Length: 611
Ligand SMILES: Nc1ncnc2c1ncn2[C@@H]1O[C@H](COP(=O)(O)OP(=O)(O)OP(=O)(O)O)[C@@H](O)[C@H]1O
Ligand SMILES: [Mg+2]
Image (cartoon, rainbow, N blue to C red; front, side):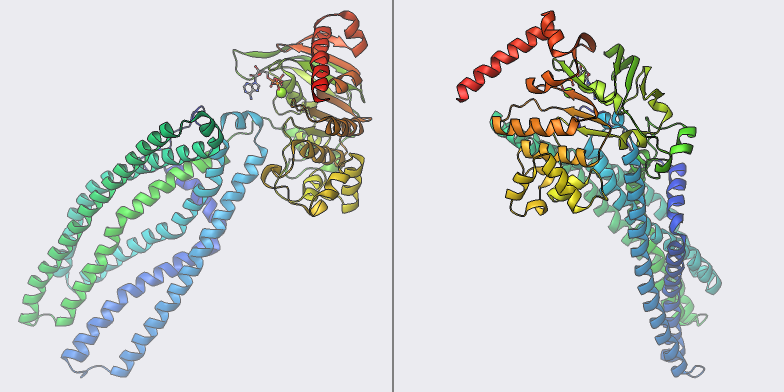
């Protein structure tokens, strides 16, 4: 699936100011934490700059001048005080960085999740599930981690560079220049290597995502792979991908292994210059030995942020790509949404004004509806249908004839390209999506359960329902008996997607769920797979209970269901070919008659074979 969907490339090399602005405005929602984090971060930088000064005083005042002009006790108190101060700053720094990381990550994830809940079917048609999951899980974590830790390192580095430049110039400008002169050289070299390292890292990530995609495809398709016996081919393809991943990551490592010693060499050069200039001054007596030692310490400290810039830049670039994808998800326009005035009256999906919801009776009109998924493949053309409340419509037709499309439009999962759908004499676009959905019960072709207990799954239809209500609907649907036979009854876990239950059982549970929500319109996309006669009967009864007194659309495959319908629509390529009750259509001896007789014969034969 993922390979079919075109994925936008997010490999912007330049800093995207607009994007960071948006990201920081989200970060700013946690401004108290962020300010505290920056504050303690700067305190740590101050600490880092003060300690070499204390060491200088130790050498000059006590080692050389034997404490003639200074008190050792005062010195010790200050030294211990500074250590305590630094310990506290470090503690607070880690605490706030952890908070910013987790709070910001949670906030970002919530924004994604809230938005994904509002997105409509067309979006999910063109976006792979895996893509959305990766955005919400790993991308959000990466962004939060980078902003909480790396970005703060950048602040620390900047503060150190500016602070040290000033202090060094004030103390001894000749030696300060010896340190500063190396900055542009290091900067140029850094730039040269960073560009290449970043490029190699980007290629590594790309190769890595190919490896991951290959992994998940072969795991998801394990059964197919095995039945087709294509393991060897899969293996070779996979090895090719991992090899390319290895080569790119080796290149990044190789570049870094050259870059680091060069930085080390430059640092050694600076220290050599300091020794030459400073050493002479010490011999001449113009400065004391402690000051030379101070500069050597400072040179080391000065290089620290410069060495880290490569790493931080690379992390920022990764975060930028992550952020681009996450923001593209958060900002994805919601295609099917209510008009302003409708929202005003009925609220949004997350904040509905239920008190303004009108009662839905269930008269439904499709008025000249045109629809297509892809512009050049029309699915419905000038579709017209009028349904009286409480009646049952069976949709019959070959695969691809547009049965699911009709019910998707009624559910407003998609909007008609032309024409209108009315319920109780009002265009559905004049009422909210929330109002519509709170009145519709949709049981899918492949019933989907969520991991949790049977009870949870039924209660999904009405979260505030009591246990008694849950059991009551299960009894009505005749699911109670099988549920009681499971290990823990209503508290039995259904497994991921309900995998621990049979298809028939899953269906019964989804019927109970739909019944609990007491919808005015029921939509049933019947499963094609034939099940044994006993479950068949059970499900047939359940369907009757569920559809009673409600307007219903049933995509019907079972003859028993179709015969009961008030209206049968025989569809072909999105057009209604025949319409009427079972008797009327049989009398006509047209398409329906042919379909019915051939199906009846095949079912008879099956029954005879089972007998
Ligand atoms: N999400 C989609 N994106 C693009 N085309 C689609 C989509 N869903 C359905 N189609 C196309 O629209 C047409 C009608 O499909 P629809 O799902 O309504 O058929 P159906 O009658 O429900 O078939 P089935 O009996 O197999 O469920 C088909 O040609 C199908 O390929
Ligand atoms: Mg269908």
